[in-house]
Length: 620
Image (tube, rainbow, N blue to C red; front, side):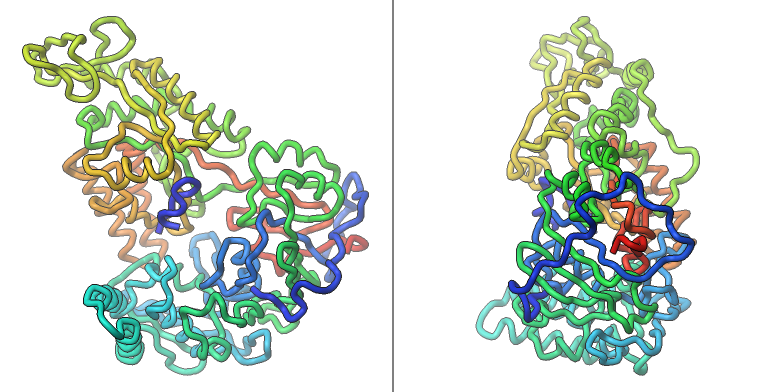
């Protein structure tokens, strides 16, 4: 499910070791005077050494990935735990039988209602116990337990009986009375025992069964961290975050917890029995660093990697980091994008030519250069990295004259020469601009008319969007709009944009932080909470219904080769209809000391292949 980033994040969306708080901090990653340029890399990776990763926020010490208190904990947990499939980012895009995958293969039934995973033999947990199908069953059944209330539970509601189970929970809550919690647990036990939703066929085989075909669920299941049943089955699900097992994690991943010092660092050491072969480096150290001082930390060799996962580098930091001898800086496509949202309930915005005129008026490439220092990309359609865009998309280059022509075609003219366009609403051909104001203005005896006078909302305190709002207002005003920029606090935006009916806004600036799957039903399905622009058939016509039909077709298959055509056509519809003016996507910037080799540089991020990182000889 998509989530608002930044100002809207709160809507949507380990391990104190025995030596916690004691001991000597691990040594910095490199010396105090790194070489001006890294030495020539040997032809083959060399084992050994420690790689230090910068984190802006200190982990809370809860490294159970299903109960982690924050993203910093999840970064650590990602290297400790394993999942059934590995995200290849290619045609798959989720693959079994690869290095990091716990499954050696999987099979989808002909009707799409069953997925069977065959597990890799010989995989062991960090404590030496064998990994089996029972661990997989335990993990996924626990995620439907009433004591687990994390957002990701919604990823698995297509499992057989899961939606009905959640409705049962809601009904019990509605009834109230004594024993509410126990009644929900009893309902869960019946579901777990009778539904067959997640079942171990033998120690090496597990089958998932569904009420409906749900394409995204393969990725949801495939990339879900698996917990060891023997460590967790005696711990109440609603106590996972406080349990000691969260502070001394046992996973199947390439690294295991060695030491945790609250507020300072977490040290992971290589797991020698990792099923894909031991990692090349001896250890990975997550060190808490002030982001304002990251250039000095990299220059002094105190950290090796910055801009990783939950600790992003800002675009404006990249240029300074590129000047540090021996530091490499690169960028990869990000999953988030920014947009200008449009109140499609207003008749003046229901003509696609008006929306396309706004796209032509706005210089989106200039936004990338000005706001991101060029480290980003203009967005033409909201498909995530790894899902190819269709050919023939309209790119809407900055063309003010084309914008003016489109507005004129749609009936918007500047009758009084004041620079603001108006249009006749009743077809009489008469416009008295003294009676025109916002949408639908006009008094008795005055032909009804409206202007392109609009309010442009942005989140208060957001400097980047404040600057974007000023730039966009200038471009829109130049083609006949009258834009009044307005900052509003979170609660105000939440009320006026998302909750209030009728909605109290004209235009606004926000962004989405999306996942790897192209399914965005929560944003675009008519009637959904987050479809706050009301992109529906009754506002903009049949193309909205067509887009929803294509999105449903993309959801109704597991095979990426079958899903891709539906999502490409869906993206083309959004590109033409512009329920948002899609603006830009910031790149993810990573900086690395030259001593560290083999770090993944594509959109999957550096942590994707941490077990293949290695350190140049003499630099450990």
